[in-house]
Amino acid sequence: MRHPLALLCARIAFLFLAMGATAGAVRADDPKPSQPTEWNAPQAEKLEALRLEGDPRRGEQLYQTCASCHGANGVGQRDGTMPELAGQHPTVLIKQLSEIRSGQRVNPVMLPFAMQLDGPRDIADVVAYIARLPLPADSGATGPGVDLERGKALFQQDCARCHGEHGEGVAASFYPRIGGQHYRYVVRQLIDVASGRRGNAHPEMARVIGAYTARDVSLVGDYVSRLGGTRSTVESSAERTEDGLYRIRADNARPQSNHVVYLKPGAELQRYTEVIIDPFMVSYAVASGEANKSAAPVRTLDPADEARFTSLLRSAFVDAMGESRYFRVVEEPGPTALRVQGWIYELTIEAPYRDDPRNFPLCAGQMNLILNVRDSRTAEPLARVDDRLAISCKLASNKLFYYASWPHVKSEVRSTWGSFLRGSLDELHELPDLPTTSAR
Image (cartoon, rainbow, N blue to C red; front, side, top):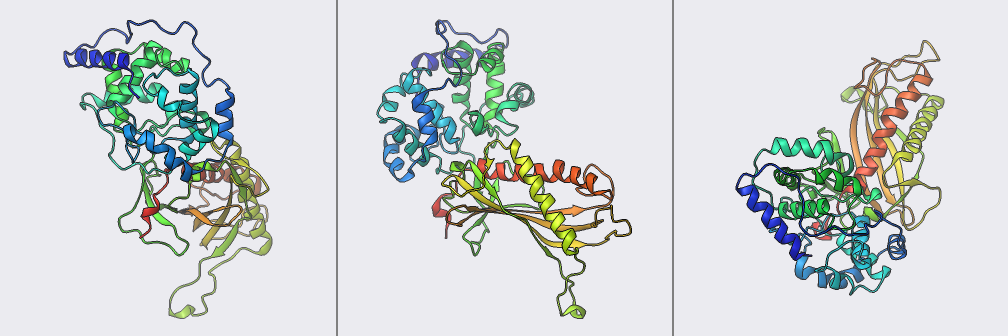
């Protein structure tokens, strides 16, 4: 997808950078389009492709044309002439293909290949296949590595609010994943956006990048090329679980060591846009040691408190999903609906408080929070998130529970747990598929 004028402009920019040029805003000699199009303007073909459920098997055949430039594994060309496609959000791929075909995005090299696709069905199918391509670690080519702190500062100031702290993008908003993209490709696109040549860039992005110097463009491009985006790989020591899942590493996973993600190869979580939230379950930790052969729970909630607790958790989750970037809550199974169940596992109540019935009965303890994710129609296990959490009576910003009345507990659960649960589900949606060859 190589624009001759863009490549010439990029080479000129690199020449100035090599000579130490640092002043002057990015600009181009060729004129901007006289009639700029509305960003992400509604278009029948694009809307239909977004609605369709793509067939990755048929898409694999269509992708053979793309593979000659983008590679069989979708990692593009390290010289930046062709971008990485693997790991990109399906919504972004559909938007770009449709807008190249309609002329909203100017790309004369890509246009004849895009026009070989026969409408929305072909677009949906080839994108469904690309969405299954895993993005290998360290596949992107980085820049010169000069003044990365300046590049980071510019990225966080101008780019992160749309593209994410890790360059992971936002599928629901059509913001592309850019973390780990080839340095020279990023620089070329930034120049095209600033000059207006790209045609379909967000106007705010064009305004911001238009004020950059050539050096700024290089520094931001270099920093972006070093971000992980969202790349997932099976851990080298991972064993296949009984339900066919593998523990994975993800570059954007939370840093806590107690946060564990399991994924089924070929799960295609990106195609799901709805979620059914089942009632939560609770099981209790049992006493250990020779003196406790009966394996009775150390402490439990009474049935009324347990029902109140699980109902509160589910309600917090449902409310928080209103802010999800990818999912809406539904009640009926369907082809794009996941079924999610929360499980409080090995709940350990170390210090219950029952003197005042207005107070929450959990005062201090530990528990595992598990989210089991299945296909809503087949009940096939697709993913699981596991996190070990603390419960505390103390009122502190880093604690999930504290000694307070039920209304206060409800507020804490909604603001803390609801956000955690919604974030965990959104995280799963952002993970590229594991290849089916991960099974071993």
